[in-house]
Image 1: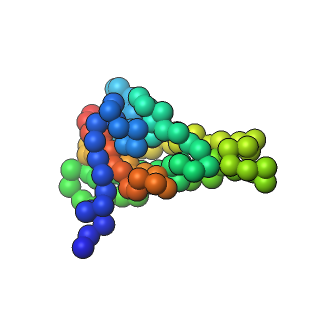
Image 2: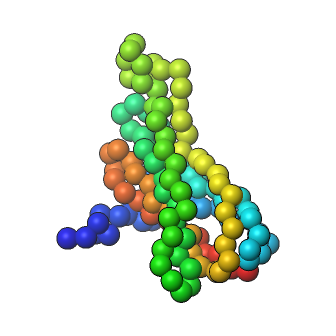
Length: 128
């Protein structure tokens, strides 16, 4: 059995759990740029105490070479409170940005984890 058997993917326009990677146009090799990763871009994810995205991880796979872990974003506030579920003062939306610099073209890959629906994957090609 492999973890890959459990990772789901779909078109983010029709499935709220797929992580979306936004890469700006006109990036150049060796120059930093801001990349955004999110879940629920087209169809909002509920983000409640009972149903939430725990984290998104971002990786880079150059055309040649191993996969590189660029970062991981944790989302900890989902409306929980002593008063009860969804009564809390804070909710963390699963949207994050980071600045990266790539020397080679390749593929950015994001994985996310929903506490109910498991592991999901999305990707974006990077060209110069």
